[in-house]
Image 1 (cartoon, rainbow, N blue to C red):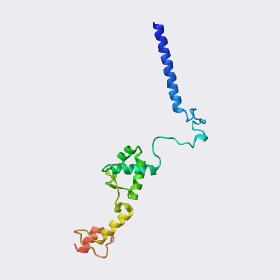
Image 2 (cartoon, rainbow, N blue to C red):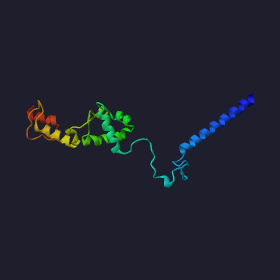
Image 3 (tube, rainbow, N blue to C red):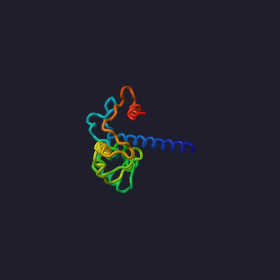
Image 4 (cartoon, one colour):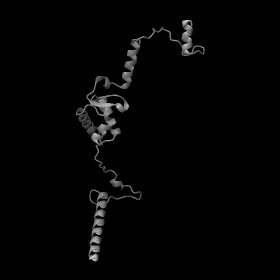
Length: 176
């Protein structure tokens, strides 16, 4: 009885080893069933270099943009991480696509850095570049004085007049 049991265990172990080896060989086999040719460094052979490897991810930005816009339209604001998880991409790729969508007016964002959320649709103020927005703010601020600010004279005091600080120069002008 023991000999029969030992023989059964040996045959099961042999079958398990064979199926494990077949599974490993199937993983490393090429599309035609044969193992890919490798050179001495372990890299793929030159004729096999051009075949794309499929990772299940979308590599074309044009294919990814509509997925992101649809996802944004179906929600009320998503972060980059949430979008990346939804479309199975890295946050870096998603950020690149979102930047183009915001520039094109297909998406807009609210908040800064980590708190930034993206929404479907865009606004005219976000279509212009950040530099243009800064210039507009500066021009707007220069046109009207701040509330409660003292009127400025036409001549601005130099940063340091004869070694004095601005505050000391201001005190001297007031006569104090």
